Amino acid sequence: MTISDAISKRILNLCKDYNISINRLATISYLTQSTVQSLINGDSANPKLLTISRICYGLNISLSDFFNDDLFNNLDIKI
Image 1 (tube, one colour):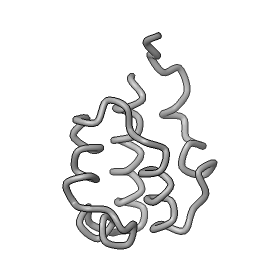
Image 2 (tube, one colour):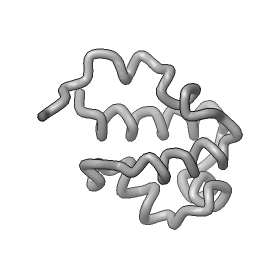
Image 3 (cartoon, one colour):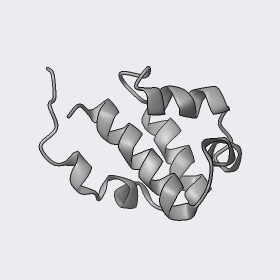
Image 4 (cartoon, one colour):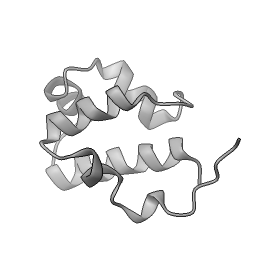
């Protein structure tokens, strides 16, 4: 799994856990819906940490909470 795939799945799982829509997540994170949607669709190959930080802010979680998931173990990292 790539980091983009893991981020996409993590965002979808968090939306499910918090029972919010992608649009609501974008609003509370001060992001456009298209930005969040591009993360979910995998259109953003190298998501910025600032964008993920804003999502964490919107959900009131830390970056470590975001990345503390099995999805981020054994990623296919291309160098």
